[in-house]
Amino acid sequence: MHKTFLFILYSILMRNFLRVIVGIKYVNKEALKKSDPFIIVANHNSHVDAMALMSALSFSQLKKTHPVAAGDYFGKSPLKAFITRLFTNSLLIRRSKDADGANPIDMMSDALQKGDSLILFPEGSRGEPQKMQQFKKGIGIILQKNPKIAYIPVYMTGMGRILPKGETLLVPFDSYVIFGEPTFFTSRMLMQL
Amino acid sequence: MNIDKFLANKEIVFIILLILGILVFSTLLFFIWGKMKPQANLTELKLRTKSWWGMAIVFILAAVINPLISYFAFGLLSFMALRELATISKNVREADRRVLIWCYIAIPIQYVLAYNGLFNLFVIFIPIVMFIWIPFMLVMRGETTEIGRSMSVLPTQLMLTVFSLSHLAFLLSLPEIAGFNAGGRGLLLFIVFITEINDVFQFTWGKLLGRHKIIPKISPNKTWEGFIGGILTTTIIGYFLRFLTPFSEIEALVVSFIVACAGFVGDVVVSAVKRDIGLKDTGTLIPGHGGILDRIDSLSITAVVFFHIVYNLYYC
Image (cartoon, rainbow over all chains, first blue to last red; front, side, top):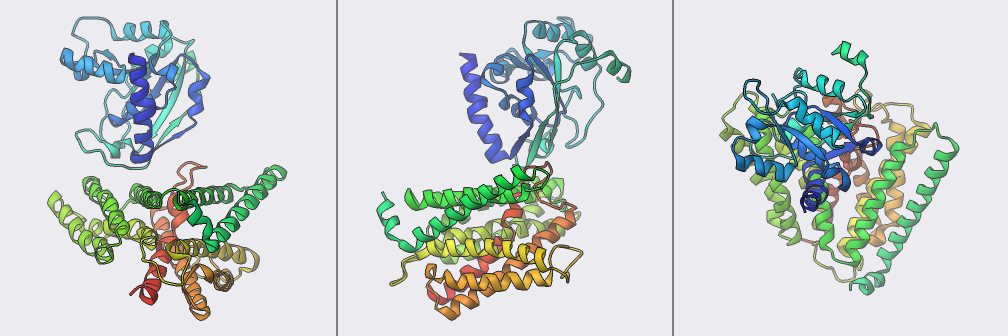
């Protein structure tokens, strides 16, 4: 049921809306087919980001792919958390340390062990339009803990102009979602991190 | 169905068959050429052929099923061209993104005016109404730093992408003239075909004979030889295609000549805009995704020039 709902929402409505009206173009989308499960690692500038990535997924991937979102923002009230999960199939995690509850790293690892895929925005928040921020360290830990699961780097450009942080009006601009090739995490990368 | 009416219009059927013939020929040619010489870069030529196929299919569908399809197709083309121009333009401030919505809203209004054949409103809506409204909206945003630049850039973008292309749609709304069978559809085919042929021949003559550059800083490929060769070829082809228009022989020659010159103007103006931004092709941020503006650069000027010549000669 939820699967069909997500399919209609993303693969039919959202995909066409984003392509025709908003002007999002996908480059090298085939990378998604080469790996299952996967961890999408993308830059973050706008609420459109997750929508654009979800719209690129196939029917079978949609239900199994969870954008990882901030529980303290999207899950403020039970209603807001329910709506976020319903519409975006999100995995809500805590961003702050002190609150008790499940460890966000474990939550993400559990999902991956189940065979699900994740969409991660390692910058942590949208930040200023069209500017890249420093990555959070969680991304390194996740990749290191799950070296058998490929990650797909994704670079998105233009999203910060379509719907920047703090704006409510969506304005069409040409923008690109560029998929890199699926890659496996090695210890050499950890040194670089 | 309109199909019987469509087939009875011999002029249109003839030129559509001609265009389909050229398309099949060039698609095969580039395909075989690409197979034989894989190192030859045919991307640009292939993209051009692809967009021609799109145009031809839309045109035939509109003629056979419902003319409304053309208005939607041109409206969408205007929208995509404006979006592309707005994206690459570095002259627009972050604060202007909300005002850009007004530019997008102008598109359906302009095309509704074209569909209903409201000529007087159609010609003033963008050059007068939007030229007043957009600066006012910019002022209401309350940010005056470099506001003058935005005041001129935004309406000019509307002129280049929406005002110009909507004239192609308005051709289809022109009333019928006794004794002129091809009608607005014929005029539309004539101007699009002549413009594209002009592009192709200016390019080809330039490659074959080009020596003397006209404006090397803006368009290094534009030469006097290509320009003159293209204009002469276009004028001759226009003369033979005059069955699509109500023109006399002399009129066909003169109009084709003017259209060929206008095509050059559109080409170099868009080139200069691109140079200013530092892009060679408007949409090629990523290879293989050709820009829409590169397809319609000359058409954005020829459409307006041609429309007003025809209108003043035959529809006043």
